Image (cartoon, rainbow, N blue to C red):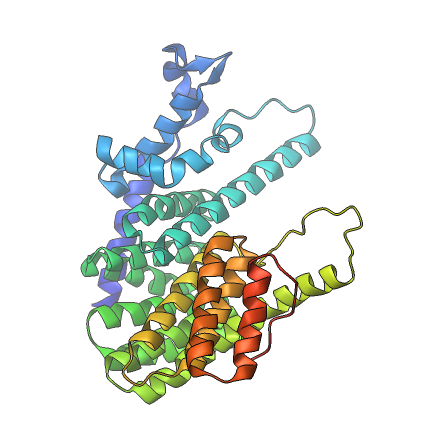
Amino acid sequence: MFRRQASTASTRIKVLYHQHRPKKRAENSSSLRMGSTTGGKPSLRALCSDLYFQARPFVQGGVVHQRADWDSIHEKICQLLIPVRTTMPFYNSEEERQHGLQQLQQRQKHLIELCYTVAQKYLFEGKHEDAVPAALHSLRFRMNVHGLNSVELVPAYLLLAEASLGLGRVIQAEEYLSQAQWTVLKSTKCSYATHSLLHRNLGLLYIAKKNYEEARYHLANDIYFASCAFGTEDIRTSGGYFQMANIFHGLNKLDLADTLYTKVTEIWHKYLNEHYQVLSQDRIQQIDLLGKQFETDTGLDEAQEAEAIRILSSILNIRESTSKKDPEKTVFVLKTLVMLYYLMMNSSKAQEYAMSAFSLAKEQLGDDEEIATQELLNLISGKEFHPITQDP
């Protein structure tokens, strides 16, 4: 049954790809003669329309979907499409031609990563509909670069599966996951990171189907493979802990959930604090002799920042809503969110969480925690700089 489902999904994707793959240059000559050119080259509008209609079979085209495609990803990649979609120039030597092909491939890989990151960001923000066009473009570019059977297609399949789950399309999600799983099984060069992502998405599928036993099995495998790839205390492993904690919380096994939520918070706190301490040292040593404003940096891409916000905000909501409140753990999450938003240069959000941490510490915790959160609030407010204290 599994093989038949994967084979059906694979066949459908291959047929669509071959029917709507980029046309040869000569085949485009008629459209070029019809005025869609600018100085002998296809206009940007023509290139955008060409790419949209090649992706159209995947998203049930139409004006509404074309608008969604533009709002989701196309506006971000429009200018990047020009060197990818225009005819390659004539080269005088084989060396120049190879160099041109390498540049083209690098541009395509950049588009793959850009579309993938944008789709991930939308998923972490809960914008599943917006994630679909970006994920589809990532899949299409991957097919162009790596072929139809490459394991490099798996991350895009997983994005589409997660978006489908978010939209309540469980059967469609199963098809994408079947294709991803079948591709991984056939591959001899699949990374631990890809195995981790596959099992995480399978875990999400079984959560949606309320099969929590199977979900825990796949999330345990997610944590194992992520630990092999990045380490047990890495932020890229924390997503598996977080999803596992959500299962235990839903099953009312609050002690197990609490332990995992605490671990996730500690992982993010440690990561963000390391970046914060670098900024702290730079300021203390007054490295910037010209008096320029110091730049802050999370070290994360947009998708990872969105993931951090989603995970830590969810944990904070759980800490604040549980009947067995623990102010010390709540303050710890608040301080972690302060560092995140501070490094993201979102001062208003950072100040909001710092004020909440200070008020809670003042009301329910000792003098030491109150002083620490006061220093934190002073920092966010632009007053005297002090390092953030370590874990409670």
